[in-house]
Length: 82
Image 1: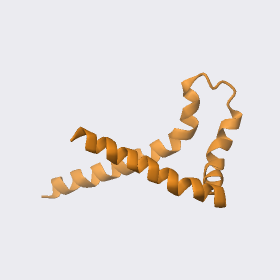
Image 2: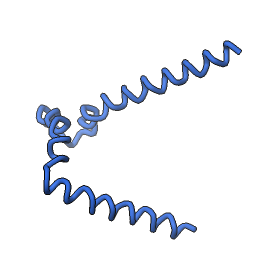
Image 3: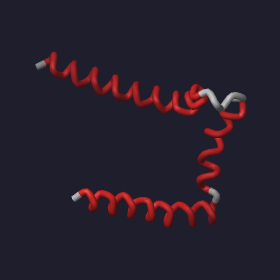
């Protein structure tokens, strides 16, 4: 069964390359998508410090936390109503 999961993962990787590589070569989509993210890194001088990744991950993390908090609050309020 473990080999099946490895095969599925390998197929996912191959399909991703087969789809995204021609898309990037033809349109530059990934370049334009990631340019705003990478532009925030230009102010960082010390990339040996792992804290520099917070510049990229903090907005996404905050969004996920806000969504999870709102889901938890709505779930607990429903339980209190019943």
